[in-house]
Image (cartoon, rainbow, N blue to C red; front, side, top):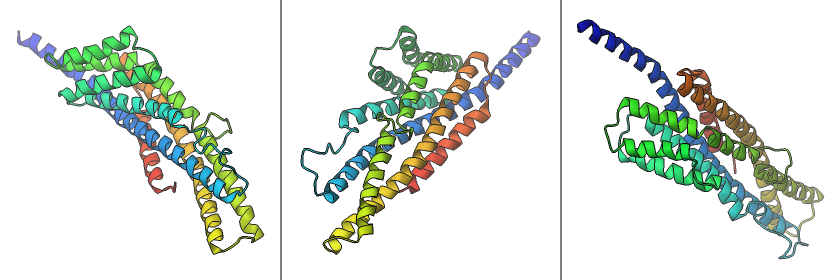
Length: 289
């Protein structure tokens, strides 16, 4: 009997040894994903605000502009920006859910996190959850009504990660498309940079001629040129780092999926992902808007 008990404890210890690193990696991945979703929400809001300011300054400097000539927020309309923010918010909520599942949180906050993520995912993807996805969410909610065992927690993580693998990749691709500076008209950041370039060219040309009515007009031109130059710097820096972060997110997601399937993942890739998000957050704080 003692021998059987000893063998059972050894098996249990081995199981914990293999699952604990995976849970740590999942929690780290969740934290980084929650942060990149939050950063994306903030950046899309900033881009919309910046485009409106750029178009407003162009209207001020260009005396030929009529009231019907400019769509001040085009193409970053409220509806288009809300769609982008929705994708980021869903990614943020996914990260939050993984963090709660991987940690020792056994409160009703886990249930709330699962429900809000499910609602956000359905809204963003424009379709109801498929049966496997719904079952993964239901499993969390039902599990909290009983004893929230380690086994139940691990199964919940596994089902959520596998059920929403493609959703995470789709959201990542959607966000990535708006941070590519290749001139495509659908990229928010490309339009942002193009508008800034146009305003800077206009303001620099006016400054170089030296023709302005008074110092008040010169001040408006200088401020417009300064803002446009700062926005171009921000667009390039944020664009490059966001692209790298999103591409790393997809690789890290693949590692998490591999981890729940095979109980092995590259922890360094998860850590790299976290470091990139930390650097991106620090950069956003110091770059001018």
